[in-house]
Length: 130
Image (cartoon, rainbow, N blue to C red):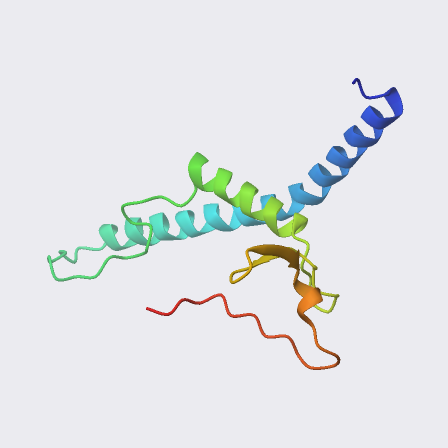
């Protein structure tokens, strides 16, 4: 079944709005990564301009001395992380999402909030016993 023109337009507008929301966050993170690399390179160059010899016991100048932070892979990870953060359903100060879970003994699916008993708090344990 093909989507109508109105549905396609709505989907395109949603994607455009998502893109416009993500771009400033992504650019801020990308500039931060670039600045971290720039400061580490600058510090390394300035220290090398001094006549002080380096010994094997010296700690690295920065975290990114041998591995740059401003790479295509890190930018992809930042974009993906920003997108996940923007699209998450749980938000601070809002109602918790009522996701589906499976009760282990009965292997029966139900919603998390179906386990609530009156006004008692609901505690979820995602750990394991080993």
